[in-house]
Image 1 (tube, helix red, strand yellow):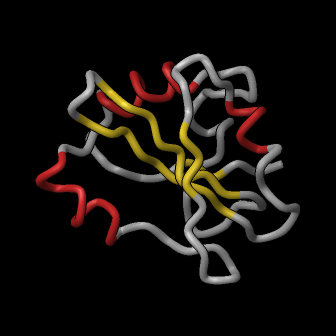
Image 2 (cartoon, helix red, strand yellow):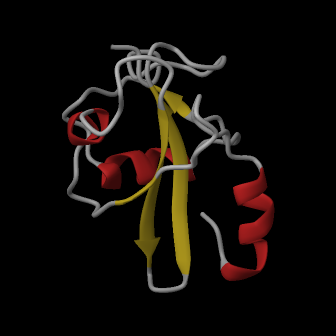
Length: 105
């Protein structure tokens, strides 16, 4: 989770898409990962999942297609396309690292 003071550090760690863009998708906790994958192109595309937390923080993590980078897949993390952003937020808050999720479709 990112508070306003450490946002610059968190955003500096993001990876751009193949075209050099950063696509932020503002999400609700009820949105599912399947809907997010529909926002991605077929090859080497990635996006940043962004969701507000308690009006003072922003949850962010990156999602990618085709195993972009060396990130775990949904299956590796025990997730599916039906997993909600809220479930992802809860799971990420208890993990030690900030490894993004790669969607291998």
